[in-house]
Length: 161
Image 1 (tube, one colour):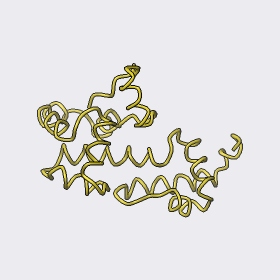
Image 2: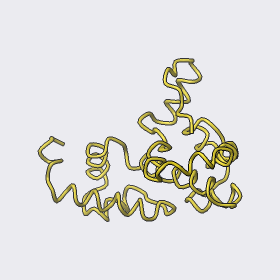
Image 3: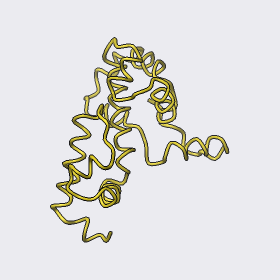
Image 4: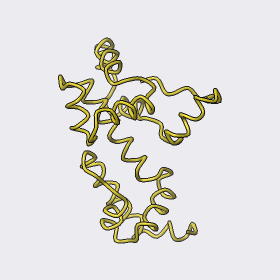
């Protein structure tokens, strides 16, 4: 796809429509086929266009939103970790825990403990700034992070929550 095609305002609006749907209902299943249908383009064209427009594939974008929501629920509610996992769209507690740890570098219960220990300090930070600072970094695929850690070549430390 060339840069001119991406600049097409109609295509960008359709991509944003799909992104907005994922944001509004990140707990739902969003296969590429469903997102492409929302956007009115083919699945392959959608996947290519989304990555070019937003710099991240649709699946990783959805993971980012789910992990952000999970962090918020862990910090702000009394839901147990299983309830947080299912509320944020995970079908398996094991998959949730493994993916959460791979992305954030720590497990969900440690995030909860740390968030509660620093609750007074966090109350002074605007919510929009806090959310941006806690956004998981998914520019590198989880499988690539695992390979780097195994080989000892992971120079960028996983962002501290």
